[in-house]
Amino acid sequence: MTANLNINYRRPIPLGSTVLLESSLEKKEGRKTFITCRVTSTDGSKLHTETSALFLSITASHLLGG
Image (cartoon, rainbow, N blue to C red):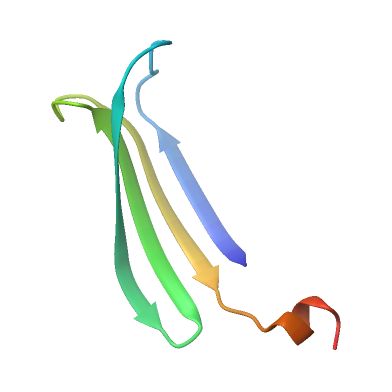
């Protein structure tokens, strides 16, 4: 389940462009998983987007209201 999602748009991506998406698992604390992501030009010279997110692991019974 997504607990927090932060997206910073730094630069537009022209239509038809090829980009590089690089994501990292920053840390895991119990049920919490912290992820970061960057979208750059293929040569890495232009940063288009930076993202950080916090995800929580939950059980199926929690989703079903039990």
